[in-house]
Amino acid sequence: DTEVTQTPKHLVMGMTNKKSLKCEQHMGHRAMYWYKQKAKKPPELMFVYSYEKLSINESVPSRFSPECPNSSLLNLHLHALQPEDSALYLCASSHHGVKKSSYNSPLHFGNGTRLTVT
Amino acid sequence: KQEVTQIPAALSVPEGENLVLNCSFTDSAIYNLQWFRQDPGKGLTSLLLIQSSQREQTSGRLNASLDKSSGRSTLYIAASQPGDSATYLCAVNGNNRLAFGKGNQVVVIP
Image 1 (cartoon, chains in turn red, yellow):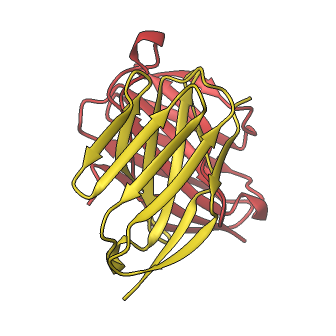
Image 2 (spheres, rainbow over the protein chains, first blue to last red):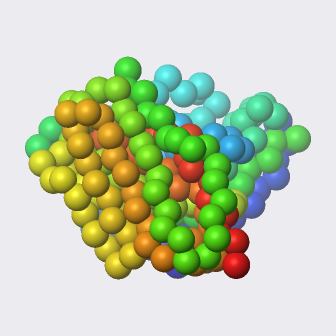
């Protein structure tokens, strides 16, 4: 079992739908991350929140909209996605926020949401 | 840009043999290196984290070494078991981003 919980586990959506992915951790971690992983590929960083503020956006298209309502929750809002956006979306958290003096805490990943866009 | 390479991409070993997985990276200015395990369709499970100032870390049958100057890390898994079958990913932390290798896909044959 993972300490980072992601819901739903599977999601099928049409290109005109609006949906949200949710991530929750109760480890007191102050940094939370969204990654996208295509089959047989390594995870790719999308967004990083540090102390509930967006600190990194890896030039992700605006059809992906992250939100961090509080230190334990991270959402990814999806709208007008394309079939090529189908992937495993992984949430992760780490103890320290994103500061140069605090890079040394490990990342903990959830089991992901398998997204299929039809 | 940090480039992380894992060799071999895939390997099969008989049960009981020791596993040796290699990871190399191009930029030695790193904060730490983390080894993960990923089962099919699942998330990543953290195995070991080595800080840039450390040479190795051990957890049970797992041992990871780090040679930052040469840009290399090795993950050793002693006395492999069928349950060790998975993809193992190396991730290098530099400039507040994890750079992942493509993974070593391991099959342990009973």
